[in-house]
Length: 195
Image (tube, rainbow, N blue to C red):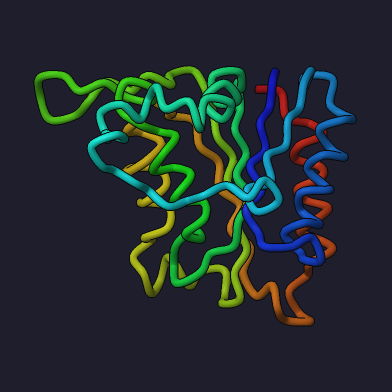
């Protein structure tokens, strides 16, 4: 298995970075994970701003040379892991800007007759590891599960990715948040992952 980890947090002195380190450590202990790449969107200084004009057309995003290396990473990966905080009930703008640009028509999906397009990333799987200040069940109880619906139905299923696993960790700024236990859970998951 080839795994791409996309890390989206503004700095490394954070719990999100600790999750990244535990994912890397667990993955290196896993014989099923043959290759691992990490993309740190902030360290990479990825520009999330979408620009369309006469020279840069939306219909040509799938061949934009400025983001070719990122398309190659997605094509290469069997499994894509996203690490990010949930801010205002959704992923950060940096990650959403990455998604807007990379998962473009004629790369991630193809329009066809009918209600839904054809997803072009079939066979890949995704794991989302997200943290939030509020309680773990806050997105479900107060936001009608908006985060998972956004990521799974409106995004991953749209591009053909059906196997999606979520880890939503709440109370992460609390001393009662069981951070160590949750880090160990992630380490164990990635050390035993077989598909």
